[in-house]
Every structure is written in structure tokens, then in C-alpha cells.
Image 1 (cartoon, each protein chain N blue to C red):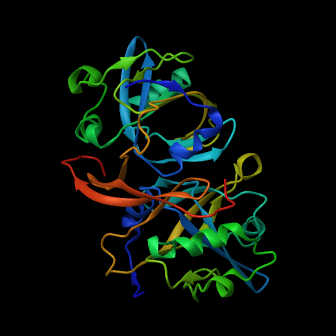
Image 2 (cartoon, chains in turn purple, yellow):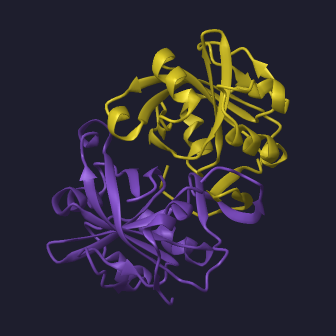
Image 3 (cartoon, rainbow over the protein chains, first blue to last red):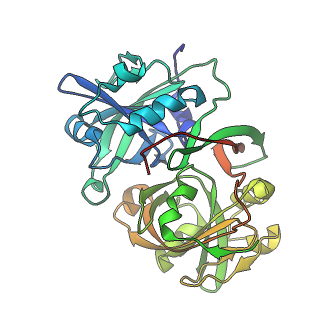
Length: 178
Length: 178
């Protein structure tokens, strides 16, 4: 997909609706990717995102060691690949290769963007206070990319056990909220 | 709406897709409600939910003081009321009365359920370590209620500035993920 830099002030609009994201890491020359749904915005700008990465996930070690990742937002056409990434471990499988995802170099972190995702957020860990108790990392988004052609992304929203809600219609109401 | 107790092990499936919730509080004999989109699951069971409540919000003081709240999940039919709650402050308006929301007594907390919401989660604050830096509270859900008739809720997902994505179709894929 075409990629254009997105102002950091607009990142919250991508994460706030709650889409499944793919978290990529690079560690010891090996790239990996896992799906994640336990995340939330924590600040508008610079954009902060809190997320839980299980200690059982291969990505946990890479995130801990490198303090960097990319959050990539997939759309409905990637649903089977997202689930395949969740069903396997990066300790045994090169998921990019196995599932046909294309890594692209990021600008500020070693973890890769995913070419097939409509948005990619380069992140670094800025707070690990709650990692020990909850595996909860606070990330700062330091560079954001979006496919400008994708105006109404059909994002995936996990309801548990492989059931996903797919984003539907958009409505606009007169709101004072940011 | 009819209400049935929901096993706590199933709460994550309500929050993980990222719906807008209404957070209710009760403090000094006054109930209040505000919309919130910055939240994430942090543990399956007991269910933990992390959320950001701005220090500018009237609800922040009540949540800090009482360490209790209810998270209520509205559907599309309540969209105008949700926005109205966000456009006003509980310091000046009795929002339940002004916007036609019906408070119901909860069982384990003083904050009210909302009769019109299809799901209601009674919560207590269990960790405030990140409140000072990020206004981030960790809540434990101690009682959950659901309308058993509402199988496919049309939840609201905020994209910013009054634009909401409404939940669309549901798909199921063979997943090993919980």
C-alpha cells in the first residue's frame, strides 16, 4: 500500500476505536509479528499507547530487550493472516515468510512496518512500571504512516475465540470531544 | 433492558473490541456519567480493565475519592445521549435527568448501572500507580450484567471529534487465541 506520514496528533483516531493490531519486533536479526487487542490510547500528543503483551509471547522478550516495536493496523482482507500469526509462535515460525506478509524498513526503529497494513506506527517503550505486574507497556508513537487511499478501513475487532466484529458504518454527531 | 449476571470470565469479550463505554460514579450523594474510549483489558480473570479518566473530568474526583465505578456499554440507539454526556460537565448538569438515562442500583458498588445499556460492569479501583502520570486507573470488574436478548450489539467506536464507527458484521475464524 502507498504510505504517507501521518501527523502524530491524528494517531489517536486510529487506535481509539479498538482495532486488532499487529505488533512487530526485531531482535537478534530476527523479525516477528503477533496480533494484539489489549491496547489503549493514554495521551494525544505525543501519542502514548498502553498495551499488554503476554510474557508467554515470543514478542515479549524482544520488546523488553529492544524497547521498540511497530503497531500495524490490518484490515478485513488480512483476517486469515492475523489469525495465523496468533496461532503460531515466532520461536518456531518465520511468520512474515510463512503467511505472506511483507516487512518494510521503518525510519526510527529496527522493527519492520508491514506493507499490507493500512497504518503503521513506529513506537518506543517509555514506561515499564506496570510490566512486572501486568505485562503492561507504555509506548510512545514516534513516527506514523498511513495509506492515504484508505478512507474507511474495515478494521477487525476481536470478541474472543476467533470471533471478530468488522467495522461497519460511520456516523458523525456534533461533539465537543476531541 | 433485561439484565442477567454474566460470568466474569466472559467480560473480556465485551471490552476487547473497543466500544465507547459510559463510566458512572456516585459521590457525596450525586451520580454522574461520562463517555470513555481510552480503556483496555489487562487480565482475563478476575477481569482487569485499565482506563484513562482525564483530571479535567468531574468524574475523576469521584473515582479517586470512592475507588468505584460502573462501566456501561451503550449501543447505537444511545449515540446522541452518549455525545450529550460528553458535551456537558457533571459539575453543572444532572446528566441522567437531563438526557433521559435511567440509573439502577448496582449490587457491590454505589455507582449506578444504566438501564438503557446492554452491559454493565461493576468495578473497583485496584491499582493507582499510573494515575499521577497518566490518569490511568486499573479497575477490577467484580460483577457483570448483560441483556441476554442482545446478541449482536451495535456498539459505538470513537474515531475522534464526534465521528463514530458502528460495529458491523461478525466473522469467525479457526483461532487458538482466547
